[in-house]
Length: 134
Image (tube, helix red, strand yellow):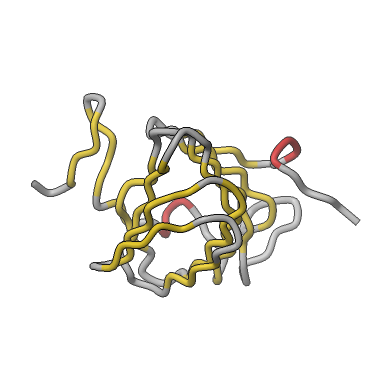
């Protein structure tokens, strides 16, 4: 039996937008599976995940700490610990931390997430988020 946590994650991604993603189970990892993936995401105060979408991957966000402002397509809502949100492809989505506490969630993706399955609509550039293609 293998027990995972953020300290023993095989894949850790840190972004310039203060997001730290620790992947536990997924494609190309020790516990490799193409059926689904599980990751822990921590977004520091003032941080965000820029707007993006996944053409084929469905995500489920399980909020565990802090508060965030989640936008899915044209809908916007505050999310907090205990909330679970299903994001079906190809919905455009982004999340921004609210307040002085880090925002944390577990993300389950089906099929398994890989870096090339994300289409970015915004990116961090010169200290700010800019919309791509404009």
